[in-house]
Length: 514
Image (cartoon, rainbow, N blue to C red; front, side, top):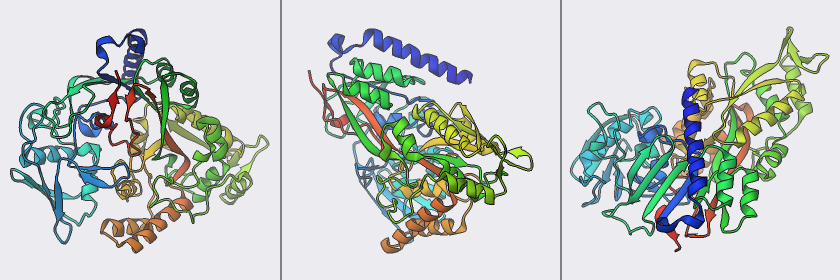
């Protein structure tokens, strides 16, 4: 908790400084600086633990990139090819590319960075089954113990970004963020501040914006105030009241994008109560998603009818029976599971009340409000919920030590351009920090394995439908709402486009008007 307090203090100080001295009316010599505000705390210089901020700021790059529709495109690699069995992949590198410290991008440098990345638990490379990485001057070859058609998509993940050899010490710790991107880091003050300057030797088209400043501001109301008063150029993650303030302000526009992100509760499948699928189904039926989405998100259409949002068209299944609000059915399901209501209306069994603990975190301001609404709606069917708003790290910690009961979180389902990689992680045999917990379904695992092995499109469609159907029936995670990213963008910023996958902030495409 002390760490969290220091971060909050840092963000508060940053907000005060910005509000007092960085208004639009006194930019002066800083007219060529783009100021970005967001709630993202940068805990480490290690790409896997950086919340993707270094990638989004175009400081570091991955071998493979993705376009706005999630299709993979060239990143640092100009081309790639696999062996027939998909167990060996070769990536070609362009000549003449340099890191920000002036050293050349070589196959050896890339192999070194990928070797470090696959040692990070937060990277999908850690579970990719890599047996070795070989390199020549302009090529990298990755050998795998099993076929992996999704490897290029995995290499779009921010954790696989390529750092210069000088970024690491002798033990592999990251000392500095030295990348190949359009911008190089001028200063980094963890967890709240990053300043960048345009990299003169970048291989791409020269960006219009010369300098970028990123500042962490954790309080949603502070971000909204800064947006409405012109204290920054781009401000991410506005809550509903903040959106209303921006919409009524001059000189700023609201930009939105439905993201491949779902707000859901992860459930401990070995919990003595929650391990019963009937209890999970009852909890789901007790939740009035549309009213919650209306009251908290101010968009009733964001109510989740299934796990996969419409922004993932290959996975969103219109044929699924939607998740519905049906408290009478919820009470009947609990009765089937042996629970009855006492005189106060509380569900009890063998003299013990039905009581569960729900953890969530304030990094996304809608989550505590959603938790309170869920608590109230479950109370109406006799289920007591103890809500604990704490550090986000407590959810994976509770997963690891088995103490988590329910965790309310926001899960991005396409941080890797192919959602299959995240689905495989979410429903894998061992679960995931931000996915299923102590739940296993052999049919789902077989479907995932077949997809990973490269099923043809007709079979793949059936396999995806199988996964979506079983997730809907057994509810190892209980979907609550889909997610729309909102950003306030100053009128002086032209060409800003919201990346629905959040891989980058597309700064290189934007222009600042004088």
